[in-house]
View 1 (tube, rainbow, N blue to C red):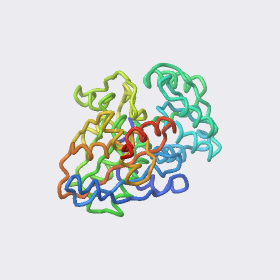
View 2 (cartoon, rainbow, N blue to C red; view 1 turned 60 degrees about the horizontal axis):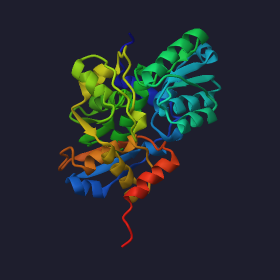
View 3 (cartoon, rainbow, N blue to C red; view 1 turned 180 degrees about the horizontal axis):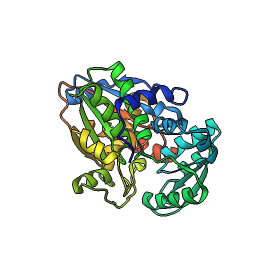
Length: 329
Protein backbone atom coordinates (compact mmCIF):
# COMPACT_ATOMS: atom_id res chain seq x y z
CA UNK A 1 0.00 0.00 0.00
CA UNK A 2 1.28 3.44 -0.97
CA UNK A 3 1.28 6.16 1.67
CA UNK A 4 -1.83 8.28 2.05
CA UNK A 5 -1.55 11.53 0.08
CA UNK A 6 -0.35 14.69 1.82
CA UNK A 7 -0.87 18.41 1.36
CA UNK A 8 2.48 18.50 -0.43
CA UNK A 9 1.12 15.96 -2.92
CA UNK A 10 -1.85 18.26 -3.55
CA UNK A 11 0.46 21.20 -4.27
CA UNK A 12 2.50 19.03 -6.64
CA UNK A 13 -0.72 18.00 -8.39
CA UNK A 14 -1.74 21.65 -8.72
CA UNK A 15 1.50 22.41 -10.57
CA UNK A 16 1.27 19.27 -12.72
CA UNK A 17 -2.29 19.71 -14.06
CA UNK A 18 -2.18 23.38 -15.08
CA UNK A 19 -2.32 22.56 -18.80
CA UNK A 20 -5.32 20.22 -18.42
CA UNK A 21 -7.59 21.77 -15.79
CA UNK A 22 -8.81 25.36 -15.51
CA UNK A 23 -9.30 27.34 -12.30
CA UNK A 24 -13.09 27.52 -12.20
CA UNK A 25 -15.10 30.48 -10.83
CA UNK A 26 -16.59 30.93 -7.37
CA UNK A 27 -19.91 32.76 -7.53
CA UNK A 28 -22.01 34.15 -4.69
CA UNK A 29 -25.57 32.86 -4.33
CA UNK A 30 -27.49 35.46 -2.34
CA UNK A 31 -30.86 33.62 -2.32
CA UNK A 32 -29.28 30.49 -0.82
CA UNK A 33 -27.52 32.58 1.82
CA UNK A 34 -30.74 34.42 2.70
CA UNK A 35 -32.78 31.21 2.85
CA UNK A 36 -30.35 29.65 5.35
CA UNK A 37 -29.34 32.74 7.30
CA UNK A 38 -25.76 32.14 6.16
CA UNK A 39 -23.20 34.91 6.10
CA UNK A 40 -22.48 33.87 2.50
CA UNK A 41 -22.94 30.93 0.14
CA UNK A 42 -20.55 30.53 -2.78
CA UNK A 43 -20.70 27.93 -5.54
CA UNK A 44 -17.51 26.43 -7.01
CA UNK A 45 -18.39 25.94 -10.67
CA UNK A 46 -16.66 22.75 -11.78
CA UNK A 47 -19.52 22.46 -14.27
CA UNK A 48 -17.37 24.89 -16.31
CA UNK A 49 -14.31 22.62 -16.10
CA UNK A 50 -12.70 20.95 -19.12
CA UNK A 51 -14.78 17.80 -19.89
CA UNK A 52 -17.61 19.38 -17.89
CA UNK A 53 -16.64 17.94 -14.49
CA UNK A 54 -14.00 18.00 -11.75
CA UNK A 55 -12.74 14.52 -12.65
CA UNK A 56 -10.16 15.88 -15.09
CA UNK A 57 -8.07 17.02 -12.11
CA UNK A 58 -7.41 13.55 -10.74
CA UNK A 59 -7.12 11.91 -14.17
CA UNK A 60 -4.58 14.51 -15.31
CA UNK A 61 -2.51 14.16 -12.15
CA UNK A 62 -2.36 10.37 -12.55
CA UNK A 63 -1.69 10.15 -16.29
CA UNK A 64 0.81 13.01 -16.43
CA UNK A 65 2.79 11.36 -13.63
CA UNK A 66 3.31 8.13 -15.62
CA UNK A 67 6.67 7.21 -17.10
CA UNK A 68 7.23 7.16 -20.86
CA UNK A 69 7.14 3.36 -20.77
CA UNK A 70 3.82 3.34 -18.90
CA UNK A 71 2.28 5.84 -21.32
CA UNK A 72 3.37 3.62 -24.23
CA UNK A 73 1.50 0.68 -22.67
CA UNK A 74 -1.74 2.66 -22.44
CA UNK A 75 -4.21 3.14 -19.59
CA UNK A 76 -7.48 1.56 -18.49
CA UNK A 77 -10.22 2.55 -16.08
CA UNK A 78 -13.78 1.79 -14.99
CA UNK A 79 -16.32 4.53 -14.45
CA UNK A 80 -19.92 5.67 -14.13
CA UNK A 81 -19.15 8.28 -16.81
CA UNK A 82 -17.36 11.45 -15.73
CA UNK A 83 -14.06 9.80 -14.75
CA UNK A 84 -14.05 7.83 -17.97
CA UNK A 85 -14.57 11.01 -19.94
CA UNK A 86 -11.73 12.69 -18.05
CA UNK A 87 -9.35 9.78 -18.70
CA UNK A 88 -10.33 9.79 -22.38
CA UNK A 89 -9.69 13.55 -22.60
CA UNK A 90 -6.29 13.52 -20.88
CA UNK A 91 -5.18 10.40 -22.76
CA UNK A 92 -6.25 11.95 -26.04
CA UNK A 93 -4.36 15.17 -25.29
CA UNK A 94 -1.19 13.22 -24.51
CA UNK A 95 -1.37 10.54 -27.22
CA UNK A 96 -1.99 7.65 -24.82
CA UNK A 97 -4.24 4.69 -25.61
CA UNK A 98 -7.19 4.43 -23.20
CA UNK A 99 -9.87 1.81 -22.51
CA UNK A 100 -12.87 2.73 -20.34
CA UNK A 101 -14.95 -0.05 -18.79
CA UNK A 102 -18.61 0.77 -18.14
CA UNK A 103 -21.55 -1.20 -16.84
CA UNK A 104 -24.84 -1.53 -18.68
CA UNK A 105 -26.25 0.87 -16.06
CA UNK A 106 -24.26 3.80 -17.48
CA UNK A 107 -26.32 5.98 -19.82
CA UNK A 108 -25.48 5.57 -23.52
CA UNK A 109 -24.83 9.31 -23.99
CA UNK A 110 -21.97 9.06 -21.50
CA UNK A 111 -20.44 6.15 -23.41
CA UNK A 112 -20.71 8.08 -26.69
CA UNK A 113 -19.03 11.15 -25.14
CA UNK A 114 -16.10 8.94 -24.12
CA UNK A 115 -15.82 7.42 -27.59
CA UNK A 116 -15.82 10.87 -29.21
CA UNK A 117 -12.72 11.73 -27.19
CA UNK A 118 -10.90 8.78 -28.73
CA UNK A 119 -11.02 6.14 -26.00
CA UNK A 120 -12.14 2.54 -26.46
CA UNK A 121 -15.26 1.60 -24.49
CA UNK A 122 -15.97 -1.85 -23.03
CA UNK A 123 -19.51 -2.31 -21.67
CA UNK A 124 -20.07 -5.33 -19.43
CA UNK A 125 -22.06 -6.12 -16.27
CA UNK A 126 -25.02 -4.54 -14.53
CA UNK A 127 -23.15 -2.58 -11.84
CA UNK A 128 -19.93 -0.65 -11.33
CA UNK A 129 -18.54 -3.58 -9.33
CA UNK A 130 -19.06 -5.82 -12.39
CA UNK A 131 -17.53 -3.18 -14.66
CA UNK A 132 -14.56 -3.15 -12.29
CA UNK A 133 -14.17 -6.93 -12.70
CA UNK A 134 -14.08 -6.47 -16.48
CA UNK A 135 -11.46 -3.76 -16.01
CA UNK A 136 -9.25 -6.10 -13.95
CA UNK A 137 -9.54 -8.82 -16.60
CA UNK A 138 -8.60 -6.48 -19.46
CA UNK A 139 -5.82 -4.74 -17.54
CA UNK A 140 -4.17 -8.09 -16.90
CA UNK A 141 -4.57 -9.47 -20.41
CA UNK A 142 -3.44 -6.31 -22.24
CA UNK A 143 -0.81 -4.96 -19.83
CA UNK A 144 -2.52 -1.58 -19.41
CA UNK A 145 -1.82 0.87 -16.58
CA UNK A 146 -4.77 1.28 -14.14
CA UNK A 147 -6.24 4.76 -13.63
CA UNK A 148 -8.90 4.09 -11.00
CA UNK A 149 -11.80 6.52 -10.42
CA UNK A 150 -11.12 7.43 -6.78
CA UNK A 151 -9.10 5.02 -4.62
CA UNK A 152 -5.61 6.16 -5.63
CA UNK A 153 -3.34 8.73 -3.92
CA UNK A 154 -2.67 10.52 -7.23
CA UNK A 155 -6.39 10.79 -8.04
CA UNK A 156 -7.16 12.01 -4.51
CA UNK A 157 -4.38 14.61 -4.64
CA UNK A 158 -5.65 15.86 -8.00
CA UNK A 159 -9.16 16.41 -6.65
CA UNK A 160 -7.64 18.12 -3.60
CA UNK A 161 -6.47 20.99 -5.82
CA UNK A 162 -10.02 22.32 -5.52
CA UNK A 163 -9.29 23.25 -1.89
CA UNK A 164 -6.27 25.30 -2.94
CA UNK A 165 -8.43 27.30 -5.34
CA UNK A 166 -11.30 27.75 -2.91
CA UNK A 167 -9.20 28.77 0.09
CA UNK A 168 -6.98 31.09 -1.95
CA UNK A 169 -10.11 33.12 -2.77
CA UNK A 170 -12.14 32.52 0.39
CA UNK A 171 -9.64 31.69 3.17
CA UNK A 172 -12.20 32.09 5.97
CA UNK A 173 -14.66 29.52 4.61
CA UNK A 174 -16.49 27.82 7.49
CA UNK A 175 -18.33 24.98 5.71
CA UNK A 176 -17.63 22.91 2.59
CA UNK A 177 -20.47 20.85 1.07
CA UNK A 178 -18.97 18.05 -1.03
CA UNK A 179 -20.50 15.22 -3.07
CA UNK A 180 -19.80 11.76 -1.65
CA UNK A 181 -19.80 8.50 -3.58
CA UNK A 182 -16.51 6.64 -3.97
CA UNK A 183 -14.89 9.32 -1.88
CA UNK A 184 -11.99 10.53 -4.03
CA UNK A 185 -13.40 14.05 -4.30
CA UNK A 186 -14.27 14.45 -0.64
CA UNK A 187 -11.06 12.77 0.54
CA UNK A 188 -8.87 15.08 -1.54
CA UNK A 189 -10.74 18.27 -0.72
CA UNK A 190 -11.04 17.46 2.97
CA UNK A 191 -7.42 16.39 3.35
CA UNK A 192 -6.15 19.63 1.82
CA UNK A 193 -8.73 21.91 3.44
CA UNK A 194 -8.23 20.50 6.95
CA UNK A 195 -4.45 20.71 6.54
CA UNK A 196 -4.70 24.41 5.67
CA UNK A 197 -7.69 25.38 7.84
CA UNK A 198 -8.21 22.76 10.61
CA UNK A 199 -11.48 24.26 11.88
CA UNK A 200 -13.28 24.10 8.55
CA UNK A 201 -16.45 21.94 8.69
CA UNK A 202 -16.53 19.22 6.01
CA UNK A 203 -19.96 17.92 4.99
CA UNK A 204 -20.39 14.89 2.74
CA UNK A 205 -23.60 14.82 0.70
CA UNK A 206 -24.78 11.38 -0.48
CA UNK A 207 -27.80 10.30 -2.47
CA UNK A 208 -30.51 8.23 -0.78
CA UNK A 209 -30.55 5.69 -3.61
CA UNK A 210 -26.89 4.64 -3.41
CA UNK A 211 -25.11 5.70 -0.20
CA UNK A 212 -22.28 3.19 -0.62
CA UNK A 213 -19.71 5.13 1.40
CA UNK A 214 -22.16 5.79 4.25
CA UNK A 215 -23.05 2.12 4.51
CA UNK A 216 -19.37 1.19 4.41
CA UNK A 217 -18.58 3.67 7.18
CA UNK A 218 -21.31 2.09 9.32
CA UNK A 219 -19.87 -1.39 8.80
CA UNK A 220 -16.24 -0.32 9.05
CA UNK A 221 -15.46 -2.04 5.75
CA UNK A 222 -16.43 -1.76 2.07
CA UNK A 223 -19.94 -3.05 1.41
CA UNK A 224 -21.90 -3.42 -1.80
CA UNK A 225 -25.18 -1.54 -2.22
CA UNK A 226 -27.87 -2.06 -4.81
CA UNK A 227 -27.61 0.44 -7.66
CA UNK A 228 -30.98 2.08 -8.31
CA UNK A 229 -31.77 4.58 -11.04
CA UNK A 230 -30.96 8.14 -9.95
CA UNK A 231 -30.89 11.54 -11.54
CA UNK A 232 -27.47 11.79 -9.87
CA UNK A 233 -26.17 8.81 -11.84
CA UNK A 234 -22.50 9.77 -11.51
CA UNK A 235 -22.83 9.19 -7.74
CA UNK A 236 -23.90 5.57 -8.23
CA UNK A 237 -21.58 2.64 -7.61
CA UNK A 238 -19.65 1.06 -4.77
CA UNK A 239 -16.37 2.07 -3.14
CA UNK A 240 -14.45 -1.05 -4.22
CA UNK A 241 -14.01 -4.18 -2.13
CA UNK A 242 -10.27 -3.57 -1.70
CA UNK A 243 -10.63 0.14 -0.83
CA UNK A 244 -7.44 1.34 0.85
CA UNK A 245 -7.49 5.13 0.75
CA UNK A 246 -10.82 6.90 0.46
CA UNK A 247 -12.65 5.00 3.21
CA UNK A 248 -10.09 5.89 5.93
CA UNK A 249 -9.69 9.47 4.66
CA UNK A 250 -13.44 10.10 4.53
CA UNK A 251 -13.82 8.62 8.00
CA UNK A 252 -11.01 10.81 9.35
CA UNK A 253 -11.89 14.15 7.81
CA UNK A 254 -15.68 14.30 7.38
CA UNK A 255 -17.53 16.16 10.15
CA UNK A 256 -21.12 15.63 9.02
CA UNK A 257 -23.11 13.54 6.53
CA UNK A 258 -26.31 14.42 4.68
CA UNK A 259 -28.63 12.38 2.48
CA UNK A 260 -30.67 13.96 -0.31
CA UNK A 261 -33.70 12.63 -2.16
CA UNK A 262 -34.34 12.63 -5.90
CA UNK A 263 -36.78 15.52 -5.60
CA UNK A 264 -34.30 17.58 -3.58
CA UNK A 265 -31.66 16.99 -6.25
CA UNK A 266 -34.06 18.13 -8.96
CA UNK A 267 -34.88 21.23 -6.91
CA UNK A 268 -31.17 21.99 -6.81
CA UNK A 269 -30.84 21.56 -10.57
CA UNK A 270 -33.76 23.91 -11.16
CA UNK A 271 -32.32 26.48 -8.74
CA UNK A 272 -29.04 26.54 -10.67
CA UNK A 273 -30.95 27.17 -13.88
CA UNK A 274 -33.42 29.66 -12.44
CA UNK A 275 -31.00 31.73 -10.36
CA UNK A 276 -27.68 31.30 -12.17
CA UNK A 277 -28.66 30.20 -15.69
CA UNK A 278 -26.34 27.20 -15.42
CA UNK A 279 -26.95 23.66 -16.66
CA UNK A 280 -25.80 21.13 -14.06
CA UNK A 281 -26.16 17.38 -13.71
CA UNK A 282 -27.91 15.77 -10.78
CA UNK A 283 -24.75 14.98 -8.82
CA UNK A 284 -23.67 18.61 -9.05
CA UNK A 285 -26.85 19.83 -7.37
CA UNK A 286 -26.86 17.72 -4.21
CA UNK A 287 -25.33 20.42 -2.00
CA UNK A 288 -27.71 23.05 -3.32
CA UNK A 289 -30.61 20.65 -2.78
CA UNK A 290 -29.52 20.15 0.82
CA UNK A 291 -29.37 23.91 1.38
CA UNK A 292 -32.75 24.50 -0.24
CA UNK A 293 -34.31 21.95 2.11
CA UNK A 294 -32.39 23.38 5.09
CA UNK A 295 -30.85 20.01 5.96
CA UNK A 296 -27.89 21.68 7.66
CA UNK A 297 -27.57 24.61 10.06
CA UNK A 298 -25.27 27.17 8.45
CA UNK A 299 -26.63 30.29 10.16
CA UNK A 300 -23.95 32.98 10.24
CA UNK A 301 -21.48 30.75 8.36
CA UNK A 302 -19.46 31.22 5.17
CA UNK A 303 -20.42 28.25 2.98
CA UNK A 304 -19.01 26.83 -0.26
CA UNK A 305 -20.91 24.15 -2.19
CA UNK A 306 -19.19 22.31 -5.02
CA UNK A 307 -21.04 22.22 -8.35
CA UNK A 308 -19.30 19.16 -9.70
CA UNK A 309 -20.32 18.85 -13.36
CA UNK A 310 -22.75 19.41 -16.22
CA UNK A 311 -22.89 16.06 -18.00
CA UNK A 312 -26.56 15.23 -18.46
CA UNK A 313 -28.71 14.21 -21.42
CA UNK A 314 -30.43 17.28 -22.89
CA UNK A 315 -33.88 15.72 -23.01
CA UNK A 316 -33.69 14.53 -19.41
CA UNK A 317 -32.52 17.94 -18.27
CA UNK A 318 -35.28 19.79 -20.12
CA UNK A 319 -37.92 17.49 -18.61
CA UNK A 320 -36.69 18.28 -15.09
CA UNK A 321 -36.41 22.03 -15.55
CA UNK A 322 -39.62 22.28 -17.59
CA UNK A 323 -41.51 20.36 -14.93
CA UNK A 324 -40.56 22.95 -12.33
CA UNK A 325 -41.35 26.08 -14.31
CA UNK A 326 -44.37 27.94 -12.91
CA UNK A 327 -47.50 27.80 -15.05
CA UNK A 328 -48.45 31.05 -16.76
CA UNK A 329 -50.98 32.97 -14.69
